[in-house]
Length: 291
Ligand code: C2E
Ligand code: MG
Ligand code: MG
Ligand code: MG
View: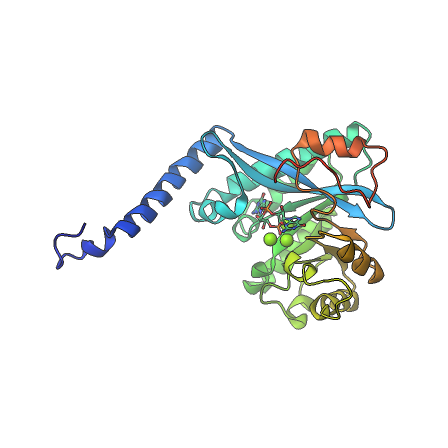
């Protein structure tokens, strides 16, 4: 397509660049519209307590119900939402939706005690984050000690003093701090020790390494040992089969989430699995909205 080889714009207008630029521009205008039109929704993936054999709560996961393209998953847009500077807005929307829903479920009599919400670094660092967070909890009447903020290890790489202060403010409210995707980032034991953290979430890539009767569980075992030595609670994500459950139980990791039990579900479907009185750990939920 390039006619003038001496022109610096030649490279910019190479066809593949053009397509990429176009896609980003389109995504940008799409996201602005989506926020205005409330196209984002929240799905819920159960946390299962293996000891008590019941659903004790949920992680809130955002989805984009695109009018033309159907459901879009966060890995395809969160980064752009961050770059566009609208993550604060989206994050607050997710938190408010999730708290409203959680409060409604509790009001309806469901015995839930754990609501996890993902918070991106930029959102956490917004000067009004704590104030607005507190406001939403008060407005929705969700007991703060049921709420967990999931952040990734990248938060720990920034300004330690500031992050520690933020964590402490959240914890003073009663909110817990969970490190998501643990093991995939940069944290080391000494890093972690500097921060007031409550929970480590073992990343699904490590859980998936637990294979039947395999001794190849070094990383998972090391993470569990690390959590124990730091006195942290532990949650395993990406639990997909019996072997995972068996192994984690043996290691006394009792709070898990994963496709073995249920995919993230729209609120109505989530409520349905809460209602299944015969809900049983060995029988994964058959409702499968997302596959
Ligand atoms: P995450 O917080 O680590 O969430 C777990 C992801 O693993 C979810 O993907 C979930 O659907 C998926 N998952 C759960 N169980 C299994 C399993 O057994 N096997 C496999 N292979 N995957 C499983 P999802 O919903 O696509 O979200 C991807 C990431 O997007 C999240 O990872 C989180 O980092 C981010 N995200 C989601 N919602 C939000 C949000 O509201 N705000 C922010 N800032 N980030 C969000
Ligand atoms: Mg998470
Ligand atoms: Mg995770
Ligand atoms: Mg993840």
